[in-house]
Length: 461
Image (cartoon, rainbow, N blue to C red; front, top):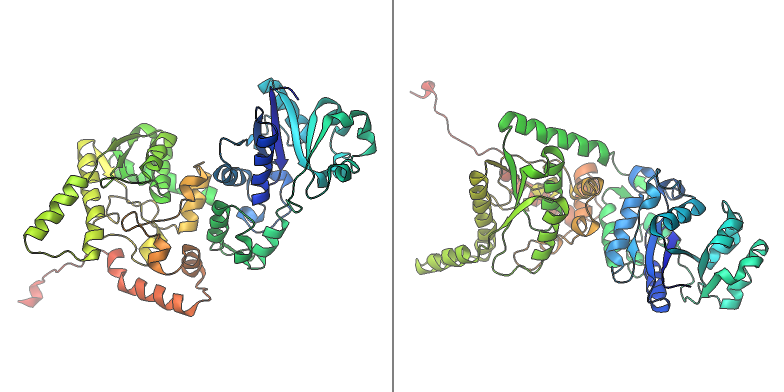
Protein backbone atom coordinates (compact mmCIF):
# COMPACT_ATOMS: atom_id res chain seq x y z
CA UNK A 1 0.00 0.00 0.00
CA UNK A 2 1.18 3.56 -0.71
CA UNK A 3 1.44 6.27 1.94
CA UNK A 4 -1.42 8.14 0.28
CA UNK A 5 -4.14 5.72 1.17
CA UNK A 6 -7.54 6.18 2.74
CA UNK A 7 -8.84 3.12 4.58
CA UNK A 8 -12.63 2.99 4.87
CA UNK A 9 -13.94 0.80 7.70
CA UNK A 10 -17.30 -0.32 6.40
CA UNK A 11 -20.33 -1.59 8.32
CA UNK A 12 -23.71 -0.70 9.78
CA UNK A 13 -22.33 -0.05 13.31
CA UNK A 14 -25.83 -0.54 14.61
CA UNK A 15 -24.93 0.25 17.37
CA UNK A 16 -21.13 0.67 17.58
CA UNK A 17 -19.40 -1.86 19.83
CA UNK A 18 -16.02 -2.03 21.53
CA UNK A 19 -14.96 -4.42 18.77
CA UNK A 20 -15.73 -1.76 16.17
CA UNK A 21 -13.54 0.70 18.06
CA UNK A 22 -10.78 -1.92 18.18
CA UNK A 23 -10.90 -2.19 14.37
CA UNK A 24 -9.74 1.39 14.03
CA UNK A 25 -7.03 0.89 16.64
CA UNK A 26 -5.75 -2.24 14.89
CA UNK A 27 -5.55 -0.43 11.54
CA UNK A 28 -3.76 2.55 13.08
CA UNK A 29 -1.14 0.23 14.59
CA UNK A 30 -0.66 -1.68 11.34
CA UNK A 31 -0.78 1.32 8.99
CA UNK A 32 0.41 4.35 11.04
CA UNK A 33 0.70 6.67 8.02
CA UNK A 34 -2.70 5.94 6.50
CA UNK A 35 -5.81 8.06 6.79
CA UNK A 36 -8.57 5.96 8.40
CA UNK A 37 -12.28 6.65 8.31
CA UNK A 38 -15.37 4.80 9.57
CA UNK A 39 -18.14 4.68 6.99
CA UNK A 40 -21.58 3.78 8.43
CA UNK A 41 -23.84 2.41 5.71
CA UNK A 42 -26.76 4.46 4.43
CA UNK A 43 -30.04 4.19 6.36
CA UNK A 44 -31.76 2.36 3.51
CA UNK A 45 -29.28 -0.50 3.93
CA UNK A 46 -29.57 -0.65 7.74
CA UNK A 47 -33.20 -1.35 8.53
CA UNK A 48 -32.99 -4.90 9.79
CA UNK A 49 -33.42 -3.89 13.43
CA UNK A 50 -36.70 -2.54 14.73
CA UNK A 51 -36.54 -0.55 17.94
CA UNK A 52 -35.30 3.01 17.48
CA UNK A 53 -36.34 6.24 15.76
CA UNK A 54 -38.95 5.71 13.09
CA UNK A 55 -39.22 2.05 14.08
CA UNK A 56 -36.04 1.34 12.12
CA UNK A 57 -32.33 1.08 12.81
CA UNK A 58 -30.38 3.85 14.45
CA UNK A 59 -30.22 6.54 11.79
CA UNK A 60 -26.93 7.20 10.06
CA UNK A 61 -26.29 10.50 11.84
CA UNK A 62 -26.78 8.92 15.27
CA UNK A 63 -24.49 5.99 14.45
CA UNK A 64 -21.85 8.39 13.15
CA UNK A 65 -22.03 10.60 16.23
CA UNK A 66 -21.81 7.61 18.56
CA UNK A 67 -18.69 6.49 16.68
CA UNK A 68 -17.19 9.98 16.98
CA UNK A 69 -17.77 9.85 20.71
CA UNK A 70 -16.11 6.45 21.03
CA UNK A 71 -13.16 6.59 18.60
CA UNK A 72 -10.32 9.07 19.31
CA UNK A 73 -9.88 11.52 16.43
CA UNK A 74 -6.18 10.59 16.40
CA UNK A 75 -7.19 7.05 15.40
CA UNK A 76 -9.89 7.60 12.77
CA UNK A 77 -12.52 9.97 11.45
CA UNK A 78 -16.16 9.25 10.63
CA UNK A 79 -17.93 10.05 7.36
CA UNK A 80 -21.67 10.36 6.73
CA UNK A 81 -21.26 10.58 2.97
CA UNK A 82 -23.47 7.53 2.35
CA UNK A 83 -26.43 9.53 3.62
CA UNK A 84 -26.03 12.05 0.80
CA UNK A 85 -27.92 10.70 -2.20
CA UNK A 86 -26.24 13.26 -4.46
CA UNK A 87 -22.83 11.80 -3.68
CA UNK A 88 -23.46 8.07 -3.52
CA UNK A 89 -26.37 5.65 -3.74
CA UNK A 90 -24.98 3.57 -0.88
CA UNK A 91 -23.58 0.74 -2.99
CA UNK A 92 -19.97 0.05 -2.11
CA UNK A 93 -18.57 0.37 -5.64
CA UNK A 94 -20.10 3.81 -6.16
CA UNK A 95 -19.09 4.96 -2.68
CA UNK A 96 -15.47 3.86 -3.19
CA UNK A 97 -15.38 5.58 -6.56
CA UNK A 98 -16.71 8.83 -5.03
CA UNK A 99 -13.97 8.81 -2.38
CA UNK A 100 -11.29 8.08 -4.97
CA UNK A 101 -12.44 10.92 -7.24
CA UNK A 102 -12.91 13.49 -4.46
CA UNK A 103 -9.85 12.75 -2.31
CA UNK A 104 -7.30 11.66 -4.89
CA UNK A 105 -6.19 8.97 -2.45
CA UNK A 106 -5.68 5.27 -2.88
CA UNK A 107 -8.85 3.73 -1.45
CA UNK A 108 -8.70 0.64 0.76
CA UNK A 109 -11.86 -1.08 1.98
CA UNK A 110 -11.79 -2.73 5.42
CA UNK A 111 -14.41 -5.41 6.18
CA UNK A 112 -14.85 -8.46 8.38
CA UNK A 113 -14.03 -11.96 7.17
CA UNK A 114 -17.70 -12.87 7.55
CA UNK A 115 -18.43 -10.59 4.57
CA UNK A 116 -16.17 -12.50 2.17
CA UNK A 117 -18.88 -14.96 1.17
CA UNK A 118 -21.29 -12.10 0.43
CA UNK A 119 -18.60 -10.00 -1.24
CA UNK A 120 -18.74 -12.05 -4.42
CA UNK A 121 -22.37 -11.03 -4.88
CA UNK A 122 -21.93 -7.30 -4.25
CA UNK A 123 -22.71 -4.78 -6.97
CA UNK A 124 -19.79 -4.65 -9.45
CA UNK A 125 -18.02 -7.21 -7.27
CA UNK A 126 -15.21 -8.13 -9.65
CA UNK A 127 -14.60 -4.49 -10.51
CA UNK A 128 -14.27 -3.80 -6.79
CA UNK A 129 -11.69 -6.56 -6.42
CA UNK A 130 -9.75 -5.38 -9.47
CA UNK A 131 -9.75 -1.63 -8.69
CA UNK A 132 -9.41 -1.50 -4.90
CA UNK A 133 -7.40 -3.00 -2.09
CA UNK A 134 -9.03 -4.69 0.90
CA UNK A 135 -8.15 -5.27 4.54
CA UNK A 136 -9.97 -8.28 5.95
CA UNK A 137 -10.38 -8.56 9.73
CA UNK A 138 -10.00 -12.26 10.50
CA UNK A 139 -12.46 -12.12 13.44
CA UNK A 140 -10.92 -14.92 15.48
CA UNK A 141 -9.79 -16.95 12.48
CA UNK A 142 -6.21 -17.38 11.29
CA UNK A 143 -5.10 -15.60 8.18
CA UNK A 144 -5.12 -18.87 6.20
CA UNK A 145 -8.62 -19.74 7.40
CA UNK A 146 -9.83 -16.33 6.29
CA UNK A 147 -8.11 -16.57 2.91
CA UNK A 148 -9.96 -19.82 2.31
CA UNK A 149 -13.18 -17.82 2.31
CA UNK A 150 -12.12 -15.63 -0.61
CA UNK A 151 -14.61 -16.12 -3.48
CA UNK A 152 -13.16 -18.02 -6.46
CA UNK A 153 -13.91 -15.20 -8.88
CA UNK A 154 -11.58 -12.99 -6.80
CA UNK A 155 -8.57 -15.29 -7.19
CA UNK A 156 -6.95 -13.17 -9.94
CA UNK A 157 -6.78 -10.24 -7.51
CA UNK A 158 -5.91 -12.09 -4.29
CA UNK A 159 -2.83 -9.88 -3.87
CA UNK A 160 -5.26 -6.99 -3.27
CA UNK A 161 -6.38 -8.60 -0.02
CA UNK A 162 -4.50 -8.10 3.26
CA UNK A 163 -5.65 -10.28 6.15
CA UNK A 164 -5.32 -8.62 9.53
CA UNK A 165 -5.56 -10.98 12.48
CA UNK A 166 -8.24 -9.69 14.82
CA UNK A 167 -9.22 -11.40 18.10
CA UNK A 168 -12.89 -10.38 18.21
CA UNK A 169 -15.00 -13.23 16.87
CA UNK A 170 -18.31 -11.40 17.14
CA UNK A 171 -17.84 -7.89 15.78
CA UNK A 172 -21.49 -7.54 14.79
CA UNK A 173 -23.99 -5.67 16.93
CA UNK A 174 -26.44 -8.57 17.04
CA UNK A 175 -25.68 -9.51 20.66
CA UNK A 176 -26.14 -5.91 21.76
CA UNK A 177 -29.48 -5.58 19.97
CA UNK A 178 -30.78 -8.87 21.33
CA UNK A 179 -29.85 -8.01 24.91
CA UNK A 180 -31.37 -4.56 24.57
CA UNK A 181 -34.66 -5.77 23.12
CA UNK A 182 -34.90 -8.46 25.80
CA UNK A 183 -34.50 -5.82 28.51
CA UNK A 184 -31.06 -7.06 29.61
CA UNK A 185 -29.40 -3.66 29.53
CA UNK A 186 -26.67 -4.48 32.13
CA UNK A 187 -25.45 -7.29 29.87
CA UNK A 188 -24.55 -4.68 27.26
CA UNK A 189 -22.14 -2.62 29.36
CA UNK A 190 -19.05 -4.70 28.58
CA UNK A 191 -19.87 -4.87 24.86
CA UNK A 192 -20.16 -1.20 23.96
CA UNK A 193 -18.26 2.05 24.64
CA UNK A 194 -19.53 4.11 27.57
CA UNK A 195 -21.13 6.81 25.41
CA UNK A 196 -23.07 4.14 23.49
CA UNK A 197 -24.21 2.51 26.72
CA UNK A 198 -25.49 5.87 28.02
CA UNK A 199 -27.38 6.40 24.76
CA UNK A 200 -29.02 2.97 24.94
CA UNK A 201 -29.86 3.49 28.60
CA UNK A 202 -31.52 6.82 27.89
CA UNK A 203 -33.45 5.65 24.82
CA UNK A 204 -35.05 2.95 26.94
CA UNK A 205 -37.23 5.79 28.16
CA UNK A 206 -38.53 6.42 24.65
CA UNK A 207 -38.46 2.95 23.06
CA UNK A 208 -38.96 0.03 25.42
CA UNK A 209 -38.15 -3.55 24.45
CA UNK A 210 -38.13 -2.65 20.75
CA UNK A 211 -41.58 -1.07 20.70
CA UNK A 212 -42.47 2.58 20.18
CA UNK A 213 -43.43 3.67 23.68
CA UNK A 214 -45.22 6.76 22.50
CA UNK A 215 -45.36 8.75 19.32
CA UNK A 216 -42.62 11.34 19.06
CA UNK A 217 -41.63 12.69 15.68
CA UNK A 218 -38.40 14.60 16.29
CA UNK A 219 -38.45 16.20 12.86
CA UNK A 220 -41.98 17.56 13.18
CA UNK A 221 -41.56 18.66 16.80
CA UNK A 222 -38.33 20.46 15.93
CA UNK A 223 -40.08 22.32 13.11
CA UNK A 224 -42.98 23.20 15.42
CA UNK A 225 -40.65 24.49 18.13
CA UNK A 226 -38.68 26.63 15.69
CA UNK A 227 -41.93 28.12 14.39
CA UNK A 228 -43.11 28.75 17.97
CA UNK A 229 -39.91 30.64 18.83
CA UNK A 230 -40.34 32.84 15.75
CA UNK A 231 -43.94 33.56 16.68
CA UNK A 232 -42.90 34.47 20.24
CA UNK A 233 -40.37 37.01 18.98
CA UNK A 234 -42.78 38.39 16.37
CA UNK A 235 -45.18 39.17 19.22
CA UNK A 236 -42.69 40.05 21.96
CA UNK A 237 -39.70 41.68 20.30
CA UNK A 238 -39.30 41.40 16.52
CA UNK A 239 -35.84 42.98 16.68
CA UNK A 240 -34.72 41.32 19.90
CA UNK A 241 -32.01 38.73 20.49
CA UNK A 242 -32.27 35.41 22.33
CA UNK A 243 -29.88 35.41 25.31
CA UNK A 244 -29.08 32.31 27.36
CA UNK A 245 -26.52 30.78 29.67
CA UNK A 246 -24.32 28.13 28.06
CA UNK A 247 -23.13 25.37 30.39
CA UNK A 248 -22.02 22.80 27.81
CA UNK A 249 -24.89 20.46 28.75
CA UNK A 250 -27.62 19.19 26.47
CA UNK A 251 -30.32 21.67 27.51
CA UNK A 252 -28.45 24.90 26.85
CA UNK A 253 -26.89 23.39 23.70
CA UNK A 254 -30.24 22.36 22.23
CA UNK A 255 -31.94 25.61 23.28
CA UNK A 256 -29.19 27.64 21.60
CA UNK A 257 -29.43 25.55 18.43
CA UNK A 258 -33.22 25.92 18.34
CA UNK A 259 -32.97 29.71 18.68
CA UNK A 260 -30.27 29.89 16.02
CA UNK A 261 -32.46 27.89 13.64
CA UNK A 262 -35.45 30.10 14.39
CA UNK A 263 -33.85 33.56 14.44
CA UNK A 264 -30.48 33.19 12.76
CA UNK A 265 -27.11 32.82 14.46
CA UNK A 266 -26.56 36.57 14.63
CA UNK A 267 -29.55 36.98 16.97
CA UNK A 268 -28.45 34.46 19.61
CA UNK A 269 -26.07 35.36 22.43
CA UNK A 270 -24.53 32.78 24.76
CA UNK A 271 -23.22 33.68 28.20
CA UNK A 272 -20.61 31.39 29.78
CA UNK A 273 -20.44 31.81 33.55
CA UNK A 274 -17.84 29.71 35.35
CA UNK A 275 -17.63 30.02 39.11
CA UNK A 276 -13.84 30.31 39.44
CA UNK A 277 -12.68 27.17 37.57
CA UNK A 278 -15.20 25.12 35.58
CA UNK A 279 -13.62 21.80 34.53
CA UNK A 280 -15.77 21.44 31.41
CA UNK A 281 -15.73 25.09 30.31
CA UNK A 282 -14.07 24.02 27.04
CA UNK A 283 -17.23 22.11 26.16
CA UNK A 284 -19.30 25.27 26.62
CA UNK A 285 -16.86 27.16 24.39
CA UNK A 286 -17.10 24.43 21.79
CA UNK A 287 -20.91 24.67 21.85
CA UNK A 288 -20.92 28.35 20.87
CA UNK A 289 -18.28 27.72 18.19
CA UNK A 290 -20.19 24.78 16.75
CA UNK A 291 -23.51 26.61 16.60
CA UNK A 292 -21.77 29.79 15.47
CA UNK A 293 -23.29 32.26 17.93
CA UNK A 294 -21.85 35.31 19.68
CA UNK A 295 -20.78 34.70 23.27
CA UNK A 296 -19.45 36.40 26.38
CA UNK A 297 -17.64 34.84 29.33
CA UNK A 298 -18.30 36.25 32.80
CA UNK A 299 -16.71 34.60 35.82
CA UNK A 300 -19.06 34.84 38.82
CA UNK A 301 -16.37 33.88 41.35
CA UNK A 302 -15.99 37.34 42.91
CA UNK A 303 -19.73 37.91 43.18
CA UNK A 304 -20.30 34.45 44.65
CA UNK A 305 -17.52 34.74 47.20
CA UNK A 306 -18.51 38.32 48.02
CA UNK A 307 -22.11 37.42 48.81
CA UNK A 308 -21.22 34.31 50.80
CA UNK A 309 -18.67 36.35 52.78
CA UNK A 310 -21.19 39.09 53.51
CA UNK A 311 -23.83 36.57 54.57
CA UNK A 312 -21.33 35.03 56.94
CA UNK A 313 -20.35 38.44 58.27
CA UNK A 314 -24.00 39.14 58.93
CA UNK A 315 -24.28 36.05 61.08
CA UNK A 316 -26.13 33.99 58.48
CA UNK A 317 -24.95 30.40 58.25
CA UNK A 318 -25.59 29.21 54.70
CA UNK A 319 -27.20 25.79 54.37
CA UNK A 320 -25.79 23.44 51.74
CA UNK A 321 -28.87 23.89 49.55
CA UNK A 322 -28.75 27.69 49.80
CA UNK A 323 -25.07 27.63 48.87
CA UNK A 324 -25.73 25.34 45.87
CA UNK A 325 -28.63 27.46 44.59
CA UNK A 326 -26.80 30.76 44.96
CA UNK A 327 -24.60 30.19 41.90
CA UNK A 328 -27.46 29.58 39.39
CA UNK A 329 -29.29 32.62 40.78
CA UNK A 330 -26.20 34.77 40.23
CA UNK A 331 -25.90 33.33 36.75
CA UNK A 332 -29.48 34.28 35.94
CA UNK A 333 -28.88 37.83 37.20
CA UNK A 334 -25.86 37.93 34.88
CA UNK A 335 -27.83 36.65 31.89
CA UNK A 336 -30.51 39.28 32.45
CA UNK A 337 -27.85 41.98 32.69
CA UNK A 338 -26.40 40.90 29.33
CA UNK A 339 -29.91 40.65 27.89
CA UNK A 340 -30.74 44.22 28.87
CA UNK A 341 -27.49 45.46 27.34
CA UNK A 342 -28.18 43.76 24.01
CA UNK A 343 -31.93 44.09 23.51
CA UNK A 344 -32.58 40.53 24.55
CA UNK A 345 -35.18 38.04 25.63
CA UNK A 346 -33.87 35.44 28.10
CA UNK A 347 -34.24 31.77 27.24
CA UNK A 348 -35.40 29.37 29.94
CA UNK A 349 -33.52 26.13 29.16
CA UNK A 350 -35.39 23.75 31.49
CA UNK A 351 -37.03 20.59 30.18
CA UNK A 352 -40.21 18.78 31.23
CA UNK A 353 -38.41 15.98 33.09
CA UNK A 354 -36.51 18.40 35.34
CA UNK A 355 -39.55 20.59 35.89
CA UNK A 356 -41.66 17.55 36.76
CA UNK A 357 -39.61 16.75 39.85
CA UNK A 358 -38.53 20.30 40.65
CA UNK A 359 -34.95 19.73 39.57
CA UNK A 360 -34.29 23.37 38.80
CA UNK A 361 -33.47 26.48 40.79
CA UNK A 362 -36.30 28.96 41.20
CA UNK A 363 -35.16 32.35 39.89
CA UNK A 364 -32.06 30.56 38.64
CA UNK A 365 -32.17 28.29 35.58
CA UNK A 366 -35.96 28.10 36.00
CA UNK A 367 -36.29 31.81 35.14
CA UNK A 368 -36.61 33.29 31.66
CA UNK A 369 -38.87 35.13 29.24
CA UNK A 370 -39.80 32.10 27.13
CA UNK A 371 -39.31 28.35 27.50
CA UNK A 372 -38.96 26.38 24.25
CA UNK A 373 -38.29 22.98 25.88
CA UNK A 374 -40.69 22.99 28.83
CA UNK A 375 -42.84 20.42 27.03
CA UNK A 376 -39.99 18.06 26.10
CA UNK A 377 -38.63 15.21 28.20
CA UNK A 378 -34.89 14.57 28.43
CA UNK A 379 -35.06 11.87 25.73
CA UNK A 380 -37.05 14.21 23.48
CA UNK A 381 -34.60 17.08 24.00
CA UNK A 382 -31.80 14.75 22.89
CA UNK A 383 -33.81 13.68 19.84
CA UNK A 384 -34.37 17.32 18.88
CA UNK A 385 -30.64 17.99 19.35
CA UNK A 386 -29.81 15.13 17.02
CA UNK A 387 -32.36 16.42 14.51
CA UNK A 388 -30.62 19.81 14.62
CA UNK A 389 -27.29 18.15 13.88
CA UNK A 390 -25.62 18.69 17.25
CA UNK A 391 -22.65 16.41 17.97
CA UNK A 392 -23.47 13.53 20.30
CA UNK A 393 -20.96 14.64 22.95
CA UNK A 394 -23.19 17.67 23.57
CA UNK A 395 -26.51 15.83 23.78
CA UNK A 396 -25.10 12.70 25.41
CA UNK A 397 -22.97 14.46 28.01
CA UNK A 398 -23.74 12.93 31.41
CA UNK A 399 -26.22 15.33 33.06
CA UNK A 400 -24.66 17.04 36.07
CA UNK A 401 -25.76 19.81 38.38
CA UNK A 402 -22.43 21.54 37.77
CA UNK A 403 -22.56 22.62 41.39
CA UNK A 404 -21.73 19.85 43.83
CA UNK A 405 -19.90 17.35 41.60
CA UNK A 406 -22.73 14.83 41.33
CA UNK A 407 -24.80 13.80 38.32
CA UNK A 408 -28.49 14.65 38.18
CA UNK A 409 -29.36 10.98 38.50
CA UNK A 410 -27.15 10.61 41.58
CA UNK A 411 -29.11 13.40 43.23
CA UNK A 412 -32.53 12.26 42.08
CA UNK A 413 -32.16 8.56 42.88
CA UNK A 414 -33.56 7.35 39.53
CA UNK A 415 -32.66 7.67 35.87
CA UNK A 416 -34.10 10.17 33.42
CA UNK A 417 -34.99 7.26 31.16
CA UNK A 418 -37.19 5.85 33.94
CA UNK A 419 -38.69 9.27 34.65
CA UNK A 420 -39.39 10.04 30.98
CA UNK A 421 -41.18 6.76 30.50
CA UNK A 422 -43.28 7.34 33.63
CA UNK A 423 -44.23 10.87 32.55
CA UNK A 424 -45.35 9.79 29.09
CA UNK A 425 -46.99 6.42 29.83
CA UNK A 426 -47.52 6.19 33.58
CA UNK A 427 -45.52 2.95 33.52
CA UNK A 428 -42.73 2.26 36.03
CA UNK A 429 -41.46 -1.02 37.51
CA UNK A 430 -39.74 0.23 40.66
CA UNK A 431 -42.34 1.05 43.33
CA UNK A 432 -39.87 3.01 45.45
CA UNK A 433 -38.87 5.15 42.48
CA UNK A 434 -42.53 5.77 41.66
CA UNK A 435 -43.18 6.97 45.18
CA UNK A 436 -40.16 9.27 45.10
CA UNK A 437 -41.13 10.76 41.73
CA UNK A 438 -44.71 11.34 42.88
CA UNK A 439 -43.51 12.96 46.10
CA UNK A 440 -41.07 15.27 44.31
CA UNK A 441 -43.70 16.21 41.74
CA UNK A 442 -46.29 17.11 44.37
CA UNK A 443 -43.76 18.96 46.50
CA UNK A 444 -42.51 21.07 43.61
CA UNK A 445 -45.73 21.86 41.73
CA UNK A 446 -45.53 25.43 43.01
CA UNK A 447 -42.50 25.99 40.77
CA UNK A 448 -44.57 25.20 37.66
CA UNK A 449 -47.48 27.46 38.51
CA UNK A 450 -48.00 31.19 38.35
CA UNK A 451 -47.11 32.94 41.58
CA UNK A 452 -50.22 33.07 43.80
CA UNK A 453 -51.34 36.65 44.36
CA UNK A 454 -54.01 38.22 46.54
CA UNK A 455 -56.84 40.26 44.95
CA UNK A 456 -59.38 42.07 47.10
CA UNK A 457 -62.99 42.51 46.05
CA UNK A 458 -65.58 45.14 47.02
CA UNK A 459 -67.77 42.38 48.48
CA UNK A 460 -65.29 42.17 51.35
CA UNK A 461 -66.35 45.62 52.61
